[in-house]
Image 1 (cartoon, rainbow, N blue to C red):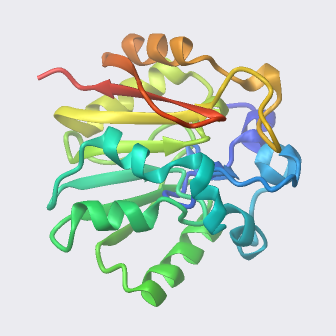
Image 2: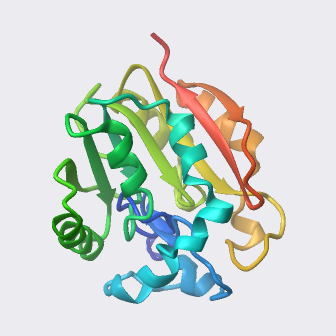
Length: 239
């Protein structure tokens, strides 16, 4: 991956969503953040998120739920208690609370990110919030780096458009997921959206994401949702 691409990736952290999420590893745009900060501040500039505390207020803002619809994201995953789910590009942990709740005390939530500072931040947050089921994982930029068939599902929020070689990356994610498990991608519409988002040159349509997942070996579909700025695509590993 080129140095330019590296600077564009934003954290693969596993929670805190936004376009800064790990991206495959970070949720720089915040697993969604925004609040008019501009896309550079959201993670599409040369910032490597060495100080996560400066992003948490926007990325984890309670009013983000109004447009990001975390309940719909979790529903698309179809999680059941005791399962293992990966938040790819967790960032500052926006998605962690609903994921922790969905898998219950017997489950595992793996917060994955390429940025160690984000993982350190998430580790502190997990201790503070009592998220005993959260595990931290430092991922590579071109590979999630988890054992084959070791997780039930993977979710990534506002990160997929940052990844180079997406079909090849999808194929690696496929091998990480158990047969029948799912990979849910939530990303920005390929049109101008209110407040924030990546430049149009980086945006992907839902149909493009479906094609990339299919190329990686998934059965893929667009999932109905009510988000004003995003779409949801779900890939399933064939049995």
